[in-house]
Length: 604
Image (cartoon, rainbow, N blue to C red; front, side, top):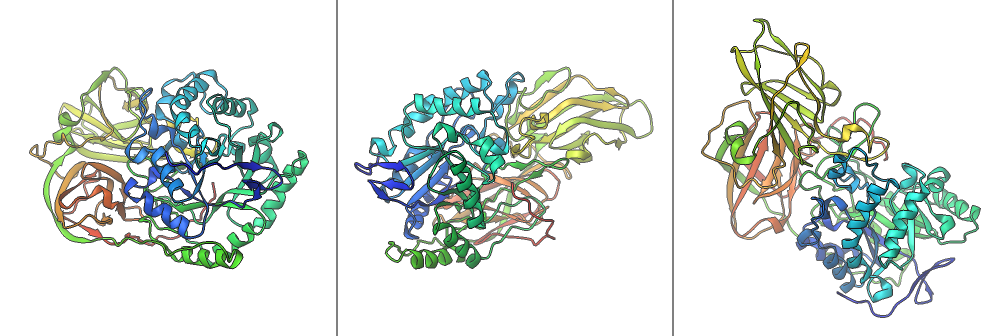
């Protein structure tokens, strides 16, 4: 563990470090969204800008993806990340809430919580608190010894996250606080919420002496005034802190990426720093690798987020400085002329054109090598099958009762369903379309019916967090004519390991397909897989799922860290569900973005 030496951090009328007033100039970096080979360069660039602190969430669902099995290694080695920050002279703010939002799948809560229909997550329900306690038993020892009070670099930790945008259960907030304190957390604690009274009142523990901070991305004077008024209402003269100063925004399928003028941002940051402390959200956004993208809850049509979490941040998805970085550098130098700054480090990306197809196999043909069926009378949800992410294939046989096209309906499923009769696609439905009639001709007296359901990401914010829609797969059943069909085999396809694919099994057109492309590199370097021409699916690079793609756009490529590549032979596997395939694929030195008509952007 890297030590900062003997230091003391306090919250009074100002922040104090070793007795002297201290302004936190921080940036958010999510270690879990960045390949560990890139941690040092990213943290160095934060320090080189003149910042003095790094802030990060801790995603429970990544560290305990299976109940009782914990992972704090490799890209989840939060201890190594914090020690690396300490070695560079950066202080740390850690937000180890059971819920993180962060546009991350289910707000960072493990999907396996949904198997217990009696439990109410994110509440004082004893069943939930017991699960959090078990998690904290493993997490807190890592953080506690890295607190400034123990010679480390953690100066502050957060209790929950934006709870005032969700509920006002003070008993729950105190239970989380107590779990932290009982396990040795003794640095100052804080909460963060929208900076208006309703959110601050519901989400803070201000009367318990826990610092209330605000989250916003502009109008610092107005928002800090509201935060100060809330402090004063409760007799506090605390420092003003914006825990998330939004410098960009995330992207959803079918809408243009949000862009913010670099110089306007720099001026807004300057306005905030004249009055208080901030953490830029994000400093480097990174990537929602695998199936970890979240979803924004809406009244009818929820909005799933894309794999890129570039966020239009000062460092782009590959970790290289953008125009925003240099605009912020000028503003900081003007405000604090004595601040130490240095040149940032950039890493050049690579490109490889026209990589030919090496092998192709259909999902139906290789299904037996990827999953063992679970049988039940009626279909079960993904969670009840013991699965959290990916796809589930539901299979049964049905009889032909008429020469007319048969009426099929998938009743109550999430998020996207493809229906096949004898491996021929007869219908695709998404969200509110699910349940509508699908009319299909049955070519034989008895046919096989397959329903492939994709979990496109659970809600990470808002009122639908505990809605039944967050249980994925088929939740009720499938009707033929007017009756539910029984006798189902269910194949769980989390696709955590694609090494078992049988590349000799064959394929046919129009069905979900795996395609493999092999290529060589002289030296590993970051790159972007161009998915132009494909329909929808996911991509594996040397066995690692680097995320989802969809022709809906706007981003038509997937970022690949250099740390996932190797000198010599490499492999890309594309799992595509729409039957839209390419016999060649290319790697690009930058992202491929298709402009889309702007449909508006809503802040979470």
